[in-house]
Image (cartoon, rainbow, N blue to C red; front, side, top):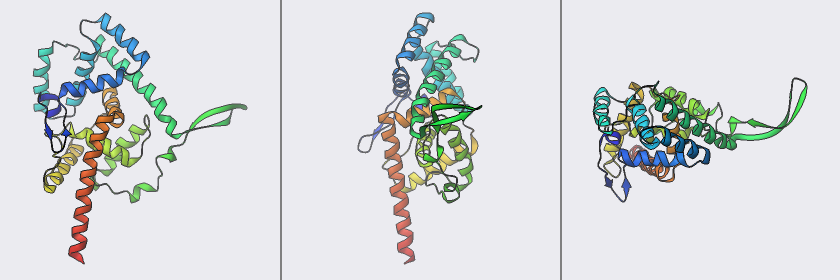
Length: 270
């Protein structure tokens, strides 16, 4: 599990970058801190506890991530974190509760903003009273029921499609996006659970093998979308400029490979 156990940084193929745990945690922390109310709570946390919020947040993200990994990854992570002397490895620990509370408030604040994408305002009657300018959410902006029987993914196989849709519906309860947008985000997220990161710029067969590996992760591991650290991390993958750009780069190469394969089949058939 390279992202949380490997301290090296790899840069391959025309600037394509992968992230070590420290870099990824820094991006995660910086995004969460980008809120005045959250910053105040973080400062209070830093005064109250013996290690800073930043370390606690990094620890809790790693803790949530390894729950979805192999036993070997989990054991390796537990050995590694002992070096940092962070002990909130319990759901009842005060620092765990406080860290999760701060992240939950971050999710709620960002979700309210994200919902603007599907919100409109109208007068509405309730219990015989007229309420003016009520905020209403219209999910048809990002989803229509008839799209799913026709939907075909180049990232996830047909056997995993219902599972991916389940995760999609859980995600859009907080952050409304289209199915195709979610797939790119979720695939990128799963690369951090894989044994290796995406082999950008390598042979087309390596890319297809990697996609198979990702689909095996979907098949074998359940991702807890109600975990606030998982949900916030997925959101940040979709909004942070450098992470979102990398997600787009990966998808663009997979799409090129897919189109190339289709063209070869069509040319061979003609």
